[in-house]
Length: 309
Picture 1 (spheres, rainbow, N blue to C red):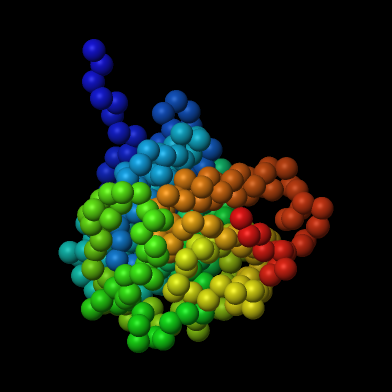
Picture 2: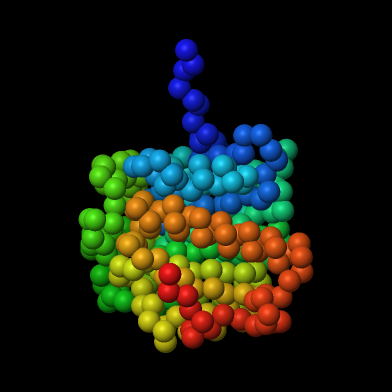
């Protein structure tokens, strides 16, 4: 008889310039990675957000490893093992510096394939874009963001913060969007929002334009059908896209049957497959030197071209 198969996901720690960050890691079992997917969780969550155990197939870490990628889901500064060192957390600029230092540590002695590709959710999407705007992002292939816009759909007083997580319904949407047991399993993922991070939440609409203008890699945004924190009408999305003036390609997708926490719901696998397909297209554009948009040299996505999937 054979015993249970070992989990492809393991816990590791990274040295980010003297700050220890905890992370979850999944690697291809029989081949060198084609690239490294860096997953960055949102406010009040942990790295396990991208490793849903509610049903087989919903984990980004496991799916990515099966498809030949290394997937690294990092506890952001102020979460996990770094919470005792950084009880108040860090602001976005500091988090970006810490994340780049952690990725430099990760790269020592490990194959990276074609480079890094970031998948960020909600506040983690803010960090992914901020890190992409950093001059140290020379090995970044692209960024995939979910649960993030640039104009809030609620009054600032109702935003989640250190003293509260905002409206439960706005985080999750309808119960039917999640497998049975998803909420019980997610309890271990929930963590306090560090104070410095919470103070920055209302500032994103003002800070986004300057950050977006410095992003020089392809970017994809996904808005859940029941996204309720962010405006995502055509006018808001059009302005969101136009701010990414240096990006060679910006895509916007709609994810049906999903709430804000897409990666914990039934739609997780669909979303993760599409995110990894975007990574494949980033690799294709790099390797084959194809135009940013097929048939349109130098063309960019715009509101009229948004795909409603």
